Amino acid sequence: MQKSKKTPRVVVVTRPSQYDELMARHSTRHQAEFFLKSRGQDLQHIDRRHRLWVEANEIVSQAVPGAWRRSRVTRADLSRFVFEPDDIVVAIGQDGLVANVAKYLAGQPVVGINPDPESYDGVLVPHAPGGAKQLFRAVLEKQCDIEARCMVSLTTDDGQSLVALNEIFLGHRSHQSARYELFWNGAREVQSSSGMIVTTGTGATGWARSVCLRRLDPPTLPGPCEANLAFFVRESFPSVGTGTNIQDGVIGAERVLTITSHMNEGGVIFGDGVEDDRINFHWGLRAELRIAESRLQLVR
Image 1 (cartoon, helix red, strand yellow):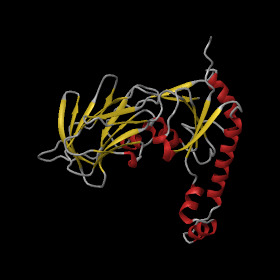
Image 2 (cartoon, one colour):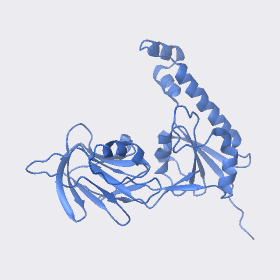
Image 3 (cartoon, rainbow, N blue to C red):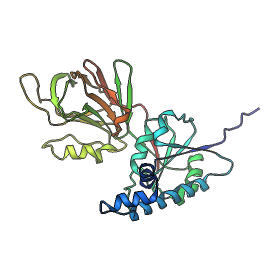
Image 4 (cartoon, helix red, strand yellow):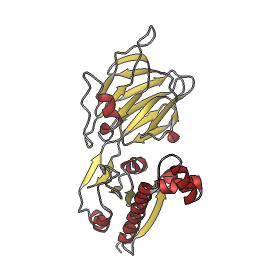
């Protein structure tokens, strides 16, 4: 007897809107309005974005076929949510929401829904809510274009790991200098700097681009689907005990960047700007960075 196929499941990923966050902080609309007004602001634009966000969620919900399974998860609960191998993941919101969910996936297709094109660029959320129904069928029938975006992976010698879609930062959690030993391309160097970032092609349009623009001879930033990473040391300081020879480079296939912490306290590693999901980078901890085996499967 032929085994029946599992009913498809759509998992909608969201984060609270600005309006929701205001209500959580001030309890009532009247108090939120008073707070904003006292600072020369009003709820008009926040209201508009919230309405669009609610409408987008309703449209996407209605687009899921009645016989399919469905689930919802907020950004704050992603670390506790169990994705199934055949899930169709839908991110409704700004581009950063896709980065938030990417590290928890293992090849599941991601449909990015942009509820407000006037507010969000839509690089990772390129689709309008009204196209959801057609997209779900196209994904199920494998009749859609998939953009496989490279990610960066970090592992430590005590068994911790981190994956990011945009970039990974290593440094000090405050404005103090980060101290570490860098191993790259057969050379090693002790450095004191503002930390360093390792970026993917997706992250190359953000933080990494800002760093790159200040370099006289920067490495070529990778494209979003290119299997390369780039790293940049930020504001390294030369001294008797620290050097500045290793400043940047391209991490291709089979290459590894190794960093060992020389910080007694305050050292951190985090991905995609999410400091709450950090690794404490204490003295002697060794971290290796390379191209991640997994790719974000972004539906185009």
